[in-house]
Image (cartoon, one colour):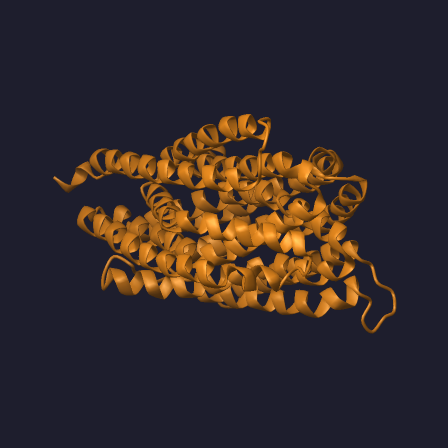
Length: 447
């Protein structure tokens, strides 16, 4: 356990954000590796896997529901020096993870086909995406166990073990991808099915590795089978905080699905270009997301210790750090956006769409960083409902105008990107306003 209620706030944020950024980059590399090797199979396969990758956001929403609640409650318990409560939350999150994982496995297999049929530009794209999902869904289901264990560590201020485990899983994925996708060394290529299988096997390895860490090295929170009987009160506490955060990611899933639906008429190359551009953007967001994720345990422990001044200082420091990082990344996309997209596709149309997407969308990076920072603070304060209200405003202000624009004569894709920039600015302003209200109400103990 690491006490985050003492010492430099900037130091704590950077110390936690650095390994988390590496860990999230490693996690993003799962899909990047798949895209790289799948792109060698042709534009249709790339479009299918790109569209299928958006399905990951739906599962990520469910894992966040579990992870955010676990981090918040354990960080509050650590701040209050209540180890017994921290252990109870951890073990109950494991039970909840098992239930959610089983539901995700069944639901993912059942919905893979209908999901791809609704978004795919053509039959070949639908077939490629569906096949990929069938083999990747078991790995997505295993993510729940990994999230429960890694979130508990994050709540106690420990992040390096999770980073190392994620790094190991990506190494496994990188080794398996060319073997299973292209048949290197075996002569039996599995194509897009191999991409999904490689990721699933890598996640399974990481889950076992993280479980081994808990049995051998972790001391503050640990496996206690006597606490595995479901306790509805603890589940309710986890879900009260986690459900809105999960809903926030579901809204992101809906937002991306609407874009895929709108640009479907431009063909599989346009979908492939947007898919690559979106994944590059997500990778670029990782430093700001890491800072946002670091806020939850740092501010959460200080909230548990009832130190309002350090909670507010955590937000100010994180907002400045995140904005500075995102400004530099904006300049990178304006300067070398074509190089970033060109690493994953040589199709001229897909390259043009992806590069154009980054050129416009990068202007909302600073505002996106502020949204991540506010979301982290809502988690730390134990009330994530404002985050979902903020996300809902973006979905409403984007979806209705976007669908209307798509039906107008002369509609072109760039209009969607410009609309997205405007809606993110509005979301950032909404998040800041809502956070100000949360500070007034939930930090009242400062008096």
